[in-house]
Length: 66
Image (cartoon, rainbow, N blue to C red; front, side):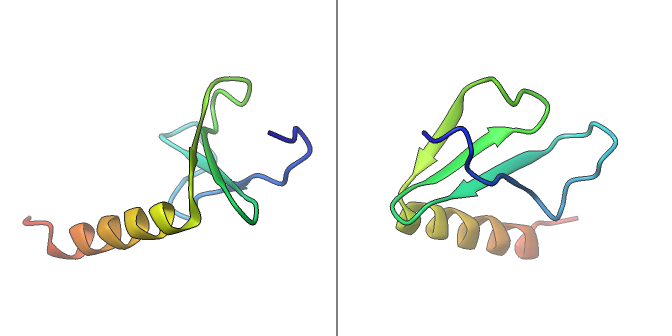
């Protein structure tokens, strides 16, 4: 993984140290890490797998019972 890749923080994250993720997309892989542990492990997904996850998460959020 390229150390100079641009990482983007989730728009749902705050900047006060909460539960945050950062994503670094590349043409063949989406890299995900904990924004509080930038030197820690990362997860890697294919663009199709990441898209499926984001779609699932968005739908689950909409249908979440209150």
